Image 1 (cartoon, helix red, strand yellow):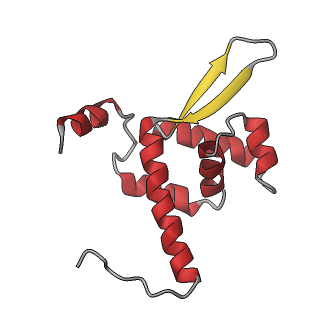
Image 2: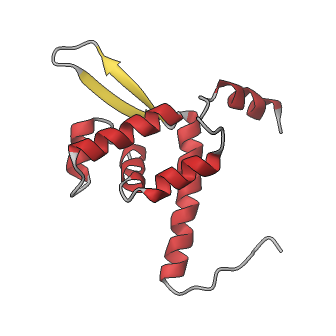
Amino acid sequence: MKSNDLKFLAMMPKLDSGRVEVLLEDVIGCRWSMSVLRVVASGIHRPGAIEREIKGISTKVLSDRLRRFNNAGIFERVQYPEIPPRVEYRLTRFGKKFAKLLKEVEKLQAELKNGKKVTNSGK
């Protein structure tokens, strides 16, 4: 690993298990996670706007996903000292890398859905 990667890992929030696999399982295991990640990555940051953008998601489920992503270090929660209070969620550096990983998962899903043969291009 490069020294920049080691510095990044040192400042990254620690997951309960310390394993990205568990985080991936949690994200992929919830039908709303990919949608929430996609919407925040597209530039929609406020919870109300996120909820309006994702048809069918409940406030409770959205709050749970935002809290989990924040705790995992994928999102940062920015609270503004205003009345009424304003909160936004943004991707962290780790979140941006994680979103890239999920884009690859989406590409794989699209290939499988379209009936393309998935090949091992590295060999």
